[in-house]
Image (cartoon, helix red, strand yellow):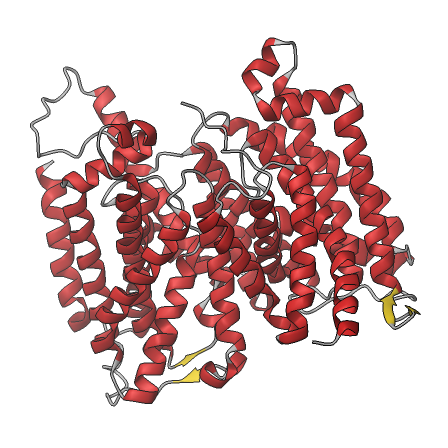
Length: 293
Length: 331
């Protein structure tokens, strides 16, 4: 195959991978702390995309700037949701918590549809169509900006988790909540904050999704499929793994697009998901999942 | 308990003769959809209730069953009433394949795989345009029956599907297989340790569980005549099936049936109440809210909660003669 096309695909794949990493990292964080697959994650991202779209069309606020609006708002929403809904489920059957997040995904989809209709939307910024070339390789400006913004937020998340006391408490709770409680971590509060951070990081992904792709409420199911494939490949609960998996899948999708029609990308994700589960169920970086006895 | 035993037989007799008396299409249509959902919900409960593994992919099997039936009518002239049982079996084999991928490890991969499977199945039906005509869908030939009788074969096949589902669920509930599934739900590690082949049990339960969705989809295809990726992969189908099982009582034979008879009429009423442009959207919101509320406030469902309440009131407690009552459900 043509080397030029391959380099082009690698560049586009890495740029997409950065955004995927941001979207999936919240899912990983929530799974790590609560052992719950947040099925509503993509619905939350889309909600943020709609909010950003509204801010853009009514106030002309740049979608990248609107990240600064949606992140705190979703942090508060996530904290309240955890405190008043999820915590009530307590240590009851995990399957019930999954069902609640499924219910929330559906409520969000229905609300988005009734408020903003089920038609395609997209955030068309002034730079949406611009691009520049480095040698033969063509780089769409909007993708570069989105990947840059994603890396900034991810970098912040990484610093928070590795360099702060809160981050240490979150990682301790992820590894073993009971021992974390023994050494003085307020596990309930840390879980709430970690969930809220996860939702807020999801929200940061919304405006980026909005500038890169057109969307409508039901697209959440394709997105959650992609994100879950990333999280499984990365080893459930490992942030480093998520980042690597997002890059791999971003690349795989773009390289596959050289051979296959682009809208076949979801199949690439499904095949990777199945392949991982058959060959290495714990993912690339995961250890065998913690399990209560 | 005696009344509870006779009630289903009386109800079945009633539903069998009902179309002789009731000719309004509206009621027969409502009932046939209730039967359809009840059958799928009973199926879902074999996996989600007995074994405790929640599937979010029911509609994937329903939709593929529907397309398979549609293609068989169009290209081979096989009526759906003949193909539905076979489609059910083939769907079960497909379910076993998915189960093999996702059920050998414990935990969350099952939920992830079923959810992803449903959206990929819909996507395939949309994108394999050469076979499925893409978003415009398949047009099935009409049944050659007078207009006032055309609903009857659908009504009776969905009723038959429900009867089969309930009989299968009853048989599983009373077998060693069923006990193994419940052991998996309660304590999978210990079930494994006491000699239950957990992977095989789970895969088998899932295969049985989804075969009803495939068969229901097949009959549904002919009922609609035109099938599209949107009509056959509607999210509401998965959602309703789960809510019905939860409302009536997860892990019981009759809970999903009771749930279907409550939720389906309620759904139809909700859609009727809502402004027409966004009725579908508000229906989603309504069902989503019901799901969250049920999980939060009635997690065991009506039948187990009712039984627990009655047993608590009755003192001294009734002597439990083995085989006459279902084992206590805890979840």
